[in-house]
Image 1 (cartoon, helix red, strand yellow):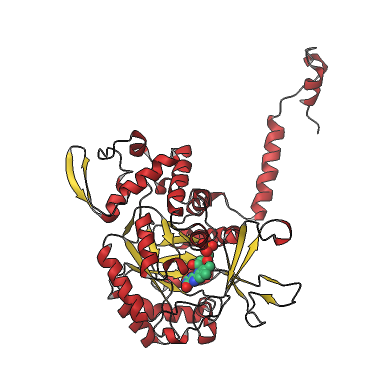
Image 2 (tube, helix red, strand yellow):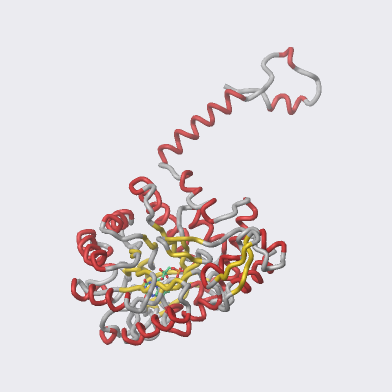
Length: 432
Ligand SMILES: Cc1cc2nc3c(=O)[nH]c(=O)nc-3n(C[C@H](O)[C@H](O)[C@H](O)COP(=O)(O)O)c2cc1C
C-alpha cells in the first residue's frame, strides 16, 4: 500500500495540469488542487483502485490550500531557489523560506556551525543522529536576491504555497519596509521568526522579542497593521510558559502560531581538547537544538498552545503549525492529534533529503487507514482531550479503583464453591 501511495503522490503532483472527471463532469485541475486530487473519491483519471480509496491529506489553512500538511520549516532546506523548487517538485505541501531581513550584510556566519548528537555507545561516530545543534544565523544572502527568487518561484508555481520567514530589528519602519517588499513578490503568507535563540538577540531580534510579551505585542501590532497576507508567529521554546507569547501574538492579529524553534543547547565538551562544540577558533556559544531528541519537548509545547487556543479562541480560524523532530508520518500524526493543522520539517530534510515527503505522506495515510480516518480534520486535535492535571489523574485513578472493586465478581460464601478450578475461584475473591 505504501508504494502505491508514493506513486499516486508523484502522479498527482506532476507540474503539468491534468483533466479529471468528477461524477460525470470534467474540469481542469492545476497546482494545489491537482496534488490533492488523487485523494478525492470518485476520481477516475488514476486507474488504481487503492489510489482512489487513499485518505485525503489535503488541508486548508488560513485560506491557503495545500496538497498535504507537510511544510518545509525555515532553515537550510528553504535557503535558495534551487532547493525550494526541489521541495515543490517532490510534493511538499508548502515551503517556508530561510528567514530574511533587510540588511544581509549584518548577518555573518561562522564555520563550523553544526554539531550532532548520535545514539550509541559513547556517542559512537556511526550512531544514528538524534540531536542537532546549530549556531547558524538567518539568511546571509542579499534580500534583493531572495526576493527575486520568491517571485520566480511564485511565477513558476502559482498554485503552490510559499511562505516567507522574516525578522527585523526593533524598528517599525524597518518591519513595514520588509513586509511590503516581501509581499510584492507574491508570497502567500509570512512567518515571523520571534524565536532564533542565537546571534540576533543582540540586535533585539528573534527570541529577544518572542521572550518579551510587551515587546512582542508592540511588534505584532506593527506587523499586522501592515501585512495583507496571513501571518504566523513562530514561538521560542526557551521560555517558561510558551502559551503567553502565543496568546499575545493571536491577540495582536496573527492568524497562526508555529512552534517550536530550536531549544537553547550546548552540544558538548570535547574531553580531549576541553573545548566546547561546535568549536570556532577554540570557542563556542550556545546554539539551537533540533531533530528527534526535541520531538517530545515540542509535543508538550504544542499541546499547551493547542489547549490555550481551544480554551480562549475555540471556533476561531486560527492555525497551528507543529515543528520539532519529525522524521516519520507517525511523528506528524502526533502533532495533528494535538491540534496542528500543518507539520514543519527542517532537520529531517537535511538528514534524509526532499524525497522524505513521500514517505511521510505514505506513513500518515497508513495511520489514517488503520483508524478509518478519511481526512486530516477527522483526527485533528482528537488526543488533546486526554490531557489533564496530575491532581485530576489521581482522582480518576481512585475512582476507577473503587469502580473495579464494586464490580469485581468473586466467591462470597462457601456455598458458591463449584469444585472446578479452586485456584481460579480463590483469585476472584474480593479482599477488603
Ligand atoms: C541549521 C538550522 C537553521 C535554521 N534556521 C532557521 C531560520 O533561519 N529561521 C527559523 O525560523 N528557524 C530556523 N531553524 C529552526 C527550524 O525551522 C525548526 O524550528 C527547528 O529546527 C525544529 O524543527 P526540526 O527538528 O524539524 O529541525 C533552523 C534550524 C536548523 C537546524
